[in-house]
Length: 128
Image 1 (tube, rainbow, N blue to C red):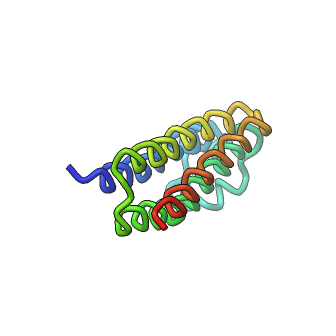
Image 2: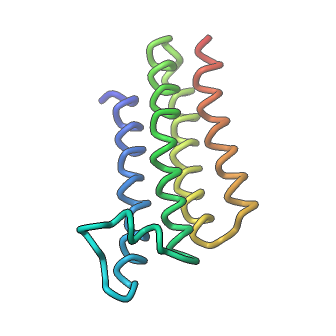
């Protein structure tokens, strides 16, 4: 099995993981989930729902960064053990990031974000 594809799949599945709380928050709004105008409804979210949306949007933003770092590491033949370490670290940091964002733990959330970004930098830097 290709470890690059596995980690990219995990990263893409994080989008589903991060979208679920947004959908719950939207469903709990007065008129329920508005599938006709979801972005308009998301703009009206507050509190926990607004944080869930921001966490989801950040998960979307992280896809190209992680994907490019992972492909660079793979293309430049970084050792599999190092890819596991840093790609796995990225995935774990992103799950923790989502949890910290929903819990409104801003400092810990920032630490998790930095850890994930550092894993992306390491994937590229170690491949040089």
